[in-house]
Length: 256
Image 1 (cartoon, one colour):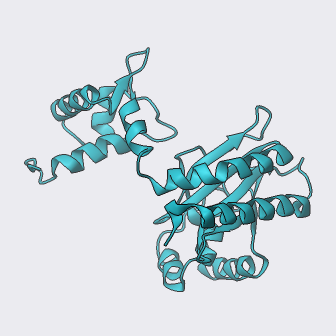
Image 2: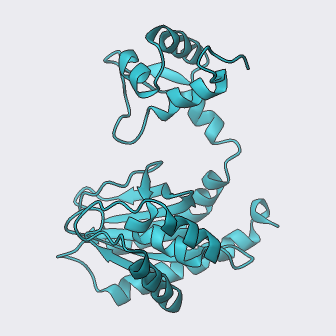
Image 3: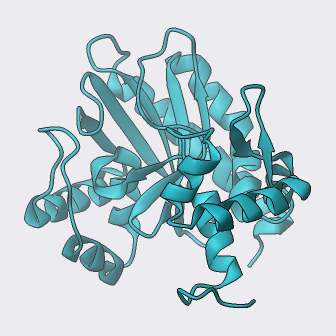
C-alpha cells in the first residue's frame, strides 16, 4: 500500500477510520471521523466514500456514518471470538435467566477486556460494558480473572503499565493487585463492587479450553444493593463455565 506524505499506509488510515467508532460513538459525521482518525478532511472524505461503496461503512437515517453490514459479514466469517461466543451463548442464557440482570463473556486483548457477548434485561442495572466494547483489565472482574490465570510475565508486564482509576474504588496499586490475583487463583472467581460503575458488582469465573488454559471470563454485572447471594450465582456461573469447556472440547474449531 502506498504511503501518505505523513508516512502512514492506506491500511493504517483505514484502520484509524474504523477505530473512530466505539460503543460511545456508534455514528459520526465525516468531520468527526476526520478528527478522531487524525486525517485531513479531504482524505477522510475519499476513504469514507470508498469504504461505503464496499459496505464497510453506511449512512444512517440522519445522514451520519456507521459501521456497515460488510464489516459484520467479514467479522462473522473467521473470528475465533465469534466462534467462542456461539458456543457459550446457550449456557450464558441459563445464567442470564437465573440472575435476571447482565451476563457477559470477555476475552483479554492486550490491556483491555473485549466483551464478545452480552445479555441484559430491561430492568437490569445500567453499566458501561457493551458487546464489542472494551474495559481496562485491572478495573473489571473479568479482566482480573484473565490476568490472574495468564502467565506471570504477562501479569507483570501489565502491572508495569498505566493503572488508571475509573472510580475511587478502582484498585491501582500493583502490590494489591498481585494479592487479588493470588486470591482469584485460589478461589477461582473475582468479585468487584464499584470499580467501574458505582452501585454495580461484577462476578466472573474463568472459562477453560480443552488444554486447561483460561481463554475467557464468564460473568455477571448486577445491582450491588439488590442481588441474589454470591454462592448461588457462583454455582450457576461455574456450571455454565464447565459446560462451555465441554462443548469447546467437542468442537473441531477449537481442536489443537
